[in-house]
Image 1 (cartoon, rainbow, N blue to C red):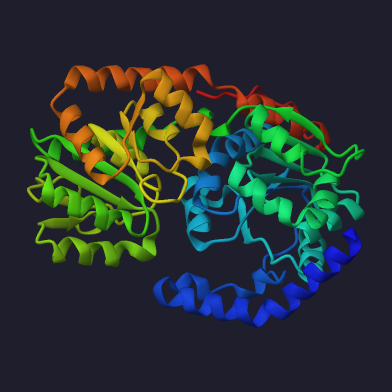
Image 2: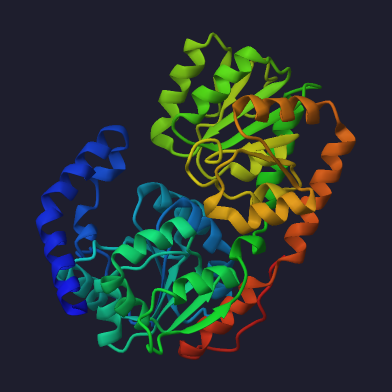
Length: 436
């Protein structure tokens, strides 16, 4: 049964290849980067081979790449004799990695999960050890690594109840793959139990541990924080509120609510995906708001418009440092919320909508600590914005609660390293990991 499921899965990948190419071409209309590097999607790479041992990390897109930043920095520091290969599936993830790490890591797309493409990837890079971040369970890839005797771990692993229901429908495919992982280092005990429940009864499977959430080991770039503070001065005495990582449909809801409930001050609106910058710009124009693009502003001239459109990558920490409070995108509609740990770490009060399944435990802790507040809809969120902008004491208390929440939950980095490093070839004295 399990072997038949994998054969069917592989056949579907082969039959779907023309559809996948069509998808890349269509996505390329709005984001031309999707029309580049197609060879890498199928395991064909131009980068020259290297003799150094390779440590491979996979972070599917922007959120996972940012979450991986403390781990990447620690591994670069502690294992200078290794080449660090970082793979993604999206151009925005790749661009984020380049901004965060420059030329210190090698970047490539992880190929689609066809056996031939996976084999070419492993033949080309010959990783000594692999790390999949969060919820990346690719059956052919996992089996290929196991058959080559290459340790492959799932780190910072999470699995929501919604995702668990989906995986259960293909359990005959997922269970044998999960069993061949070396280790699963989960964010929480609930995540670990949900993943363990996918294994076949009686299967020994990987070594499970609970390490916490790597996102809590995030440290904002001081240069970006200073940049945001400079921007804040350009706004003058007006309050500044941020809508961070907004998703499709959310901007329209919030802007319509803003028309019903005007809020003074400067709105900084930062869409999650760069291909939507122009779409959001059109929404602002259609609603008669005065606005300015970050890409057309030098960061010093006075900001007199209603809205600053954050059409830049890699500057989220600066936008956060600029803001008196933030509304976290992905939470108003059914996207499951985006990372609210970053604003807490920077000391910015957080407002969230009803959809939080991707960060359920973090949201629960942030609400309990008083670092975040929640509303059911766009009007409710703007009512909270209005209330908090008029309450500097309340904002300061939320900001402090956020910083303390992050500080209490640090430590996942050291625990992740304890899972990964035993499988690495020794390349000199390893310095201690820092999560400041």
